Length: 85
Image (cartoon, rainbow, N blue to C red; front, side):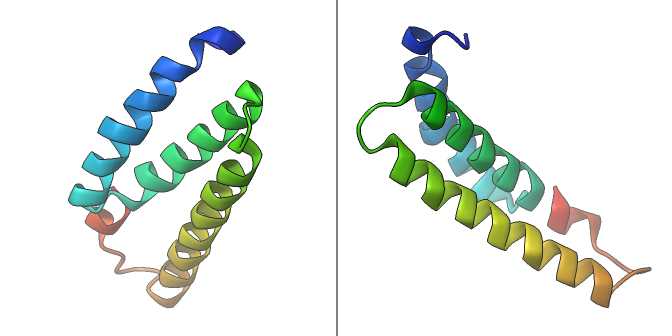
């Protein structure tokens, strides 16, 4: 499905179905990986506006990753596995 013409279906599924589920579940890791994956697909697709949206999603994923790292550093032995999906 990586061919340029076949990216719209997976993008729609990730945006409209997968990400909302991860958000509701509080699945932080899956959410940040999903956002990064969507950003990669947008950059591959190269449609107008895709680059800006990809940058936004990558920044959101980076922020979540940094927050998770800070949490783990502050709570090395007692991390709540549910927080990270």
